[in-house]
Image (spheres, rainbow, N blue to C red):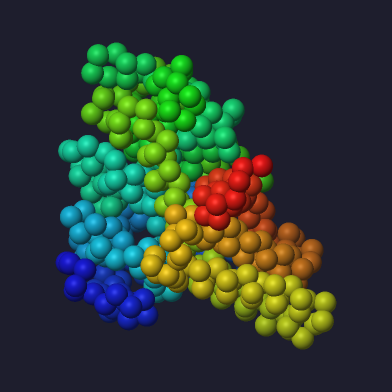
Length: 408
């Protein structure tokens, strides 16, 4: 399918998707039952997640995600913003968000395990990887044959990403990688990992980095889960102990790792504000339903928080709906950081509203509808201020690269 086969207007595109998705809905629509989401509010299984975490029985969930992604790819709908030559539609990022929203609204299962590969690894491969690596892996990611992860952060290099110390030493036609990565989302499920490593310890820290694509099943790769206060373990630490990577799996030029990382991070920050993030139509329906069920809109104690929540969500949706040419020339390069900050702030306000309205019932299952259901969302929201770069990093990016302000 080509980009001319579908409408570019976002509303019309959503209507088009609903018609097309009906062709594959029978095999996948779950009538509201998906990872992290159940029909009966108030049950012990009811939970609303800010960061989706695959739990017991996730093998079946992952298999379903892969099958859904393959069906979307075969229908020409897996990657609306992607280049046509890779099975995309050549449209804007907003069309990816519309796809996520329509899938969620129609009751299709979550594709959360595929998020990093689809939105972070694949764009870097398209922009920087050599052939045939680019075509082979990008196609695999967008068909759901491969799950990707991001091997960036380290115990000593989180927000200061250019300070990574994982080493890659040349050995003939291969590189030998040794080091530790941390906070690797979906690392326990991944088939490939985009690894930022240091190839020249004598060069300035930004200039001595190179990006590689690592086989996560290769000898020397160890993945250990990190248990979070939500009870889940979506993040992992990854150890690379003499992992051999062929030079043909180098993404970009030698010493150009920082440029490749910038491509991935820009896509991550922008896509985190879309429906692939925590503020799905389901979450919005639940928070609106909670407020109305408890009559909180009539309570003067809750009205200010309701107003702040509505304002934050409205601002995020307005910014996410902008087309690329709607941003000023100066701000367009930092649009991802702006969207990411607006998303995190909106999630904060929703968490505060749920906690305020429910009180103790937000964390205690007393049998009432919505009791305990919001606990995982509230506990998971702080992670959104770290993922994709901390708030402080985003403010610096916006100030310096977008507004042209001097460094402090």
